[in-house]
Every structure is written in structure tokens, then in C-alpha cells.
Length: 488
Image (tube, rainbow, N blue to C red):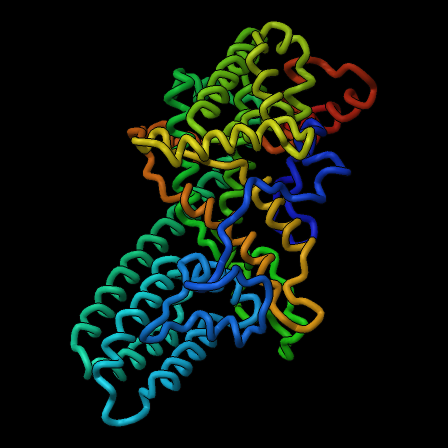
């Protein structure tokens, strides 16, 4: 089955994958990796916070004339607070605390005091809108911002100007995000539609059907274009989606629903990225199974091995794993005569790099190397780090499942959310990299819309290429020919 986002089952891999690609060994997957200490979320002074009541954590978020929380604390709390309180409710609480602490409901205001406090609250609101812009799709949020700034604007008209700049940037960012989401949805719909047409071509399309090598025969160029697609998907994923993908009802919340609504929509970009991974797996398998001649199939295998190697060198581990997974699907791996004609030494080296043994130890080592290169890079080319996304999600899932959100005394388990913020924050750094490679529209269009076989189509194409070896395969071949081709 294709990979899906689910709080209970996480990701499952496409049916027929080599077992070692389906996840870590049973005894190993319970532990999410620790790749060095994460930044402790603390106040401007004092030790890192490990737990506290929600009220205390909100209090620590609110700036004063003489205090501003650490950037790490702001990100950690804004990321995790949505598990306990909705963004509109949180903003309301922040504004109420500010009004009370700064005595903003009195007249006249203490201008000197407000002028010390004003820039700090505007800084907090700026950080919030820049890091979690989708929180402000709610008109209540925008209205609350304007109402609050109206209270302090009499002390300095520059506050209105700053807020307008913040809102203008927010509007532009939301518009770009909406445009990107609509583009991804449109591509997904087109790909699905064309895939159905492919089945009408009866598994082995005539020469009018293009193939990858006729579109792009240079492995490095294709790896670059795959990196374009990956980074475009990554840009759309907000940090809050990692939290909302595994949301559970807060036991101390008396309502019947999670503290945010429209759950499916809020993880749509994450789900779209999973669909892209599945599509690339099936596209690779389709390209290998489609040629009628063994020599051509072997050539396609060698080509994708080289593409996978270039993805590894770039730091595009997600495309690398999708290619390896596609080549390990049963309809492809059973083509023994085809594999016998292909040069596969480099493939086994790449498989070793992505081997799940030791909770993907080899991959995690390579990822740390790529992350270090990114931190010291002088160019965007060296800054690229695209993690194997399913494993990143699984790590976050086990962190979420292995640690309670609240302690027995009702306090928020903030130490858990510091680690969550570390993992998500690292991802946020990687997704901001601008792709340095020139776009090739023809290749990108093919990658995103080319017809792909369903699982049954792959098996039928595989059996048509190399005959079934046992009675089970013969029976399945006969059934597939009847169902798909209408033959007996």
C-alpha cells in the first residue's frame, strides 16, 4: 500500500518493497535517534525549562519592558502550545497579559514605559507571523493584532507602520503558500488522471508513450530536477504540520475536539509530500518494467542507479530512497534476467548507505555529514539537505508516542517539546535553501505527470517481460491478463 500519514500506523511502504526498506528492525525502531544535544529552550536568564504549567509557559512567552524570551523558547512554545490551546486563544491570552502587565487599559498611558515595551511585543508578533503564518489565516488573529496595536499606537505612530509591514509580508507569504499548494494539488490531479489513461493502453503502451531516457538521459541533470521537486514540496510544509499529524486530545481539555479544527487541511502539504515519494517509487518501477527488451530494461536500471548516486552526492536523500525503493519493488526485483545484464555494484553500495540496520545508522551518519557541510557551506549547492522524510516523520512519531505531553502533576512536559523543536527546527533550516540548479520544465513536467502503472499493472508488465517462475505467479499472471487486458 502507498505510504500514508496516520497517528496510529505512521507510514506504510508500497506493497512488494524489500523488507529491509519497510522500516527499522523490530527491536530497533522504538528509539528515535539522538543526533547530539538540541538547544535548550530557556528564558533569557536561568536554566532550561523541563516542565511547567501552561499558564506559566504563556507568562514566559510574554515580553515586558525589560524582558524578551529566547528565540528557541518562542519557537518551541509556539510549535507545541497548539496541542493545548488554539492559536487564537493563545494570542488572546498574550494580549490580555500584556494589557494587564503594562496597564494598557488605563488613561493616560505611561509613554516611556510603552516605548520600551512596544518594540518587544512587535518583535514577538513578527516572529510568530514569519514562522507560523498559517495561524493567521484566521481573521480573528488579524483583528486581535490590530486591536492590540491600536492600544499602544498613541505612544508611537511607528507601531502602526511596523504592524502594516508585518501584515503586508504575511499576506504575501500566505498568497505564495496558497499558490504553491494549488499548484501541487493540480499536478497531483493531472498525474492521477494520466495514470488511469495508461491502464487503457493495456500495460505495454505503443511507441507514442514517451519514457524517461527520451526526456533526459543525463543522471546528474535528472537528480538536479528531482531536487527541484523535493525542495518545492518542502517549502510548503509548515512546522505546525509535524505536531498536528499526531495530535491527540488533551486529557485536561473538557471539549470533545482537538484545540484546532480542519485537521486534514492542516497536514495537507505533508501528505502531498508523501504522495510525491510514492509517485517517484512507482515511476521508477514503471520505467524499468515498461521496455519490451531485456537490454533496454537493464539500461534503465543502470541509469537510475546513477541518478540515485547523484542524489546522494547532492544531499537529496528522499529521492535517493524513493529510487532504491522503486527498484526493490517485487515486480522489478523478480526480473532476474534483466538484473543479470545490468551493472549493479554501485546499487549495492547505495543500498548499504540506506540500510536500516542499527536504526539506519549509515544513513544517519551520512545525514550528519551533509548537515555539517550545509552549516559551513559557501554556496546553496553545498547547503542542500533533503532528509529521508518517512524516517524523519517516524522519529517524531516515536518521540510523541514515547513521551507524555503532560506529567502526572498536570504540567506540560516541556523537555519533550524542546527535542521536538530541535528536530523540526533543523528541518526548517534545510527547507529554506534555494535550489541552485536551473529548472528544466520538460523534465519537471514529465516527473510530475508521466503515466505510472498501478501495482497490478507493474506485476503484469513484469510477467510479460519475464515469464512467471511458479504456479502462484502463473495464476496471478492469468488473472491480471483477464482483468486488465481482457485476455485469457
